[in-house]
Image (cartoon, rainbow, N blue to C red):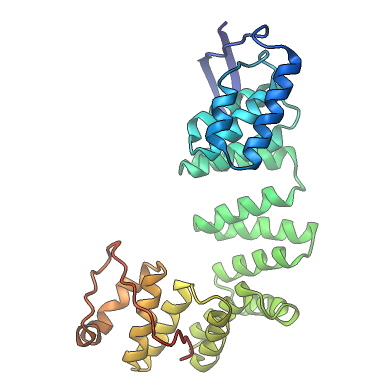
Length: 306
């Protein structure tokens, strides 16, 4: 049975033919409910291939079968079949009363496909439906931060703080304040978090960044070392350490940090690596600049203290 659907989604009127094959008599409601329970069990155990095969043995009860659409979209998502997941979420969107949640899921799926314009429209629709949902606001704040839209990010961060002054919301406000160039304001917020939560990695890292920008290298290294003692796998922090050390003409130690930065995936490290090129050659290390070939070099003692 084919239904011709016309619906408003993502700010655009879309007319499309959706092939919704409905066979309500294929299985009894009891059998269908048992299958849905089994699918939930399979997905809980991460057996998404089996869940997909089991769902494939039946069809939607009717065009209002939200359970079927939700289960299908979840399974398709975990099998990285994003376009199919979107298809089933669209079907669910037409009949569900929880439209905000579905718009948010659609935003995630579009984000996974790097379809940023569609993702932000979906996030906007989710927030319009549920204006106080912190998860949705944080997702949009992160979207704005990642896409270099600091003023919009700051507006959402302020909204989050008005809802709840939690640590996470203070950190979002601090990051947005940092991104608009107000390092003094950002420092105060990060210091507030650090004083209450001395193991908070975001606070430690950005305090180190701000000290570095202020040319207070000793303090910057102190905080970067604190960070690396808690998480010795952050390429960005190793790269910032390398910058400081190379500016201090401590080339050998800067090389150690650059190698770590490249090992842990910091692309900016390749741009700076030429400063240590001679030192790399002395060590017999060949650096392929700005490629995906990342050298795996580790200090024998595992130390990160500079």
